[in-house]
Amino acid sequence: MDNHFQERFREAQNLQNGTGTGEKDINKARDIYMELAGDGFVKAQIALGELNEENDVEEAVKWYKLAAGSGSDEALAKLGKLMLKEKDYALAAQYFSSSSKEGNLDSRHKLGILYIKGLGVATDTEKGLSLILDSASRGFVFAQYDAGYIYHHGICGVYDYEKAEYWYSEALKQVSDKEQVSEVKDVLSLLQKEKDEFQNLVENAANSEFVKLYNIARHYMKGKGVRQDYSKAIEYLRLAIEKGSPDAMCAIGWCYYNGNGVEKDLEKAFEWYLKAAEKGHSEAQNNVGWCYANGLGVAQNYAKAVEWYRAAADRTEQTIMEWKNFYADKVEKAQKKEREIRNSDLIQGNTSAQKNLAWCYQHHLGTSLSPAEADKEAFRFYRSAAKHRDAEAASSLAFFYKKGIGVEMDMSQAFAWYQRASEAHDATAHCNLGWFFESGKGGVKRDIEKAKYHYRQAAAKGVKKAQERLNFLSSKSNI
Image (tube, rainbow, N blue to C red; front, side):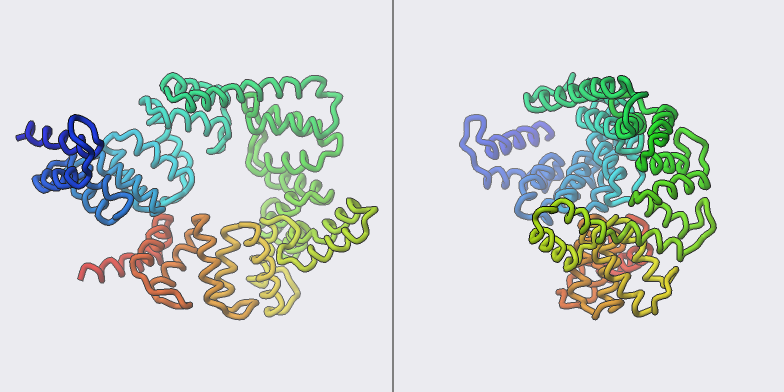
């Protein structure tokens, strides 16, 4: 019987691909696959899933699930890949997880990527890297390339040139496609180029300006062209600081804040952030605000937090002055640019600071403004940060529109901003979109399947309310 199934399956494949002695005939191939699938032949069930992927996803899922129910690891992997195409990352993660337990290297690799990116699962870079390395060590070429990329670019917070070079080289041993060979060779050449650039950079470093010294420190911090070494980075940061570099002051503050290359010391971190902030360094100003807001290395003081957040968040006047200097001999152009800046919803400044400042205003902390005025300021800065593509700010802006905080209630705007935030995989936004599709509010057409999809994405990242709604809707559909 098995031989009969195999022969009929090969016949269907020939008809599907136009190989063998017969002409290509998809319909006949489908009929044979249906016959075999009905008899429980797993390969035929998978083939039907593949045939339906482009035009009928539900039908494809049905056949893949049937094959998976018979223990097919391949079917589970294909379900995962199909869910990736459909952007249902939560289901993709579930299928890849099941398939990877059966030893599927491609599934382990893809599940690792989902963990690193926080798609369909809570972000866990350590677990993600472990899965990719496991797949790479067993010879899966795409995992080998990605392992090289991760170490090369510090995707999981660890830069390691030697490991990057090793994994890129392992991948090169296996690839045969000319374009892929060329791509891997290019990245290996880039590694060597970065090493050469670093060597050129460190020549006569002691007599260099602070910009060059700071760049050397950054190379050590990021392991660019050299083995990552925070202790060496600290040495060059101190040299750059001696020559007045605000960037180096902020960077050494970050090192003390995280305990990289030095013993963790929040008070010293705050001191260095403050020194850089007082020199107008916007990132440092935001960090000083963060320290004040959270009582890190300094006594908690929301008023001071707002002061420093605002310094970083609203640099409108500085930006206008810079443009005036740029157009020093072109007054009309300078005036036009000033009008554009002042009339824009995009406030010139540090996006993270805008979001943090908005949060303080939203909760009426550290401000003498009335609650109504503070709400308007919160809305204004959330809107600016959201338009700078900050997903959390976009989700908060949607909430303001939904509740009418600092702006007239507008459910269509709320829905639109939640959608934008969900495109960046914001869990809160997915949960709220689930509510819109479940309730049909705000002019949104009620769609329970879409509601479940969004609840599923949020629940996978630990949003309890989303899990509760998903359980409720699933229980109703089973009645």
